[in-house]
Every structure is written in C-alpha cells, then in structure tokens.
Image (cartoon, rainbow, N blue to C red):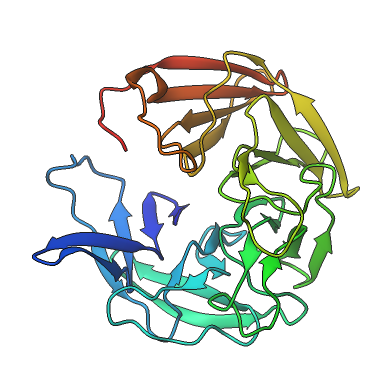
Length: 304
C-alpha cells in the first residue's frame, strides 16, 4: 500500500513472488520503501530506498494514510504474511503505527496507540480527509488479530486524529449483507459541507461468517457516506460503465467547477478466470457530483 508525503512516495506491506527451480515462491516486503518524485525516472532505472521496519509488523493490505500535517503517515490493520520464512502472531488488538521520516531515504516507526474497541481486519479500504480516516469493510480471521471471531468487518470505522476517538457505524445501506472488500474508497473534500466518503466497486457476499459466494459490486452505482450525519446515499452513474473488476487501481483529484475526478485503471477480473480483453485494459474516469463515467482509451501496457 502507498501514501504520498509531499514529493515522496512511501510503500509498505504486501508480498512479491520470484521464480525458482521449484516454481513461484512468495516473499514478504519486510521493509518500507520510499521513492523521490521530485526528479524524473523510468521503470528501467527507478531506485527505491529501503527503510528498516524496526518492530512494526509485516502485514498484507494494511490501511495507510497521511498525518493531518503531512509530515508522517499511519497504518493499522492487515493480515500477517506467511510468505517466505516470516512467522509472527497477529496483535491481540489492532495496533496503530506511525512512520516519521528523517529524510527521503530514512525514518523511524513507532507504535502510536491501540484500537481496543475494534477487531483487526484485512482487505478493507481507507480514505483520509478533514482530520479523520475512514475504513470500510474487509474481514477478520486468525491472521488479522488474536480472536475467535472470523467473519466480516461489518461497518465503516472513523478515527478522529485530534481526539483519538474511534467510531464504528453501519454500512448497511451500501452493503446490506455486511460484506464489502477489494473496492475503492475516496474522501471528497469539496462536497457535503465537511466532505463525503465515496465508495464503489469491489465484491460483496451473502450474509455469513465466510466469503463463499462472492459477487461483484457493479460500477453502475456508488455509495456516498456523510461522516457528520452517519447517513449513506446510493447514487447511480451515467455514461460508459467499466466491466466488473476487483483490486483495480484508482486515484482521485479535485477538478474544475467543484468536481472530483477519479481515474480507475481496470485490471484483472479476480473472481471468474476470464481472459481480459485489450478493450478492458484502459483508464476510466468518474466525475462527482455528476456521477458520470467515461473511458479514456485502451492502454498499451500489458497488465494482468
């Protein structure tokens, strides 16, 4: 997962796979990496800085967001990786960690607190804005936290960075079964007075303790959550709708005329083992508040 502080990109968590005589071998990213974006580079010569994680956990799919002053970033949640020789127990309760950069190439991790009222989750999505981070969906199991609870992380969790208070509210109007993961979450600062949370895509499931009948959440609709009132609103979209996908990449920026523009790079299908057509590998745009989607042409990059 990545976060931008000024002109430096930080990446933390996850796994990679390398080829061996015995076949593909997964291995954890057990360091934090940084990349200076103030100078030009190409995929052939890009140089990442490797930063020691100290005592901070090695997680897959952690939630990550910048501090309000933009001088550090925080992580929470995720599942303990079992790749390579890495073996560790998940925390007893969710732990909040902060990374404080010393410069572009170095920094220090510290434990910033605990979320004792919550159960750790993975595959949830987070968005930061107006002094709070909002975390939606995901699920719990024996690699997220030490607990007997296995099932959906039902709700949208908000953490006020100033007061240190956690709040868990319903996501029922957006995901009635309580299941939502692998989608997209953005904080839109210029709408709803103090900003709204935009959710779309991903997958859902039938009510239950395990995600056994996953189905796509269509891009034909988006969810809008007002953190001040706790209310959800479902909004249909117009224009060209992307094909169903999970685990795609998206980035959002404020546009002209008080709009918010989200670029979605549609990657693999993720549920059905289908061949991805070249026409599906392209960038798609969602404009809020019009909720209009349009395609931006096929990409020349060969993405899975």
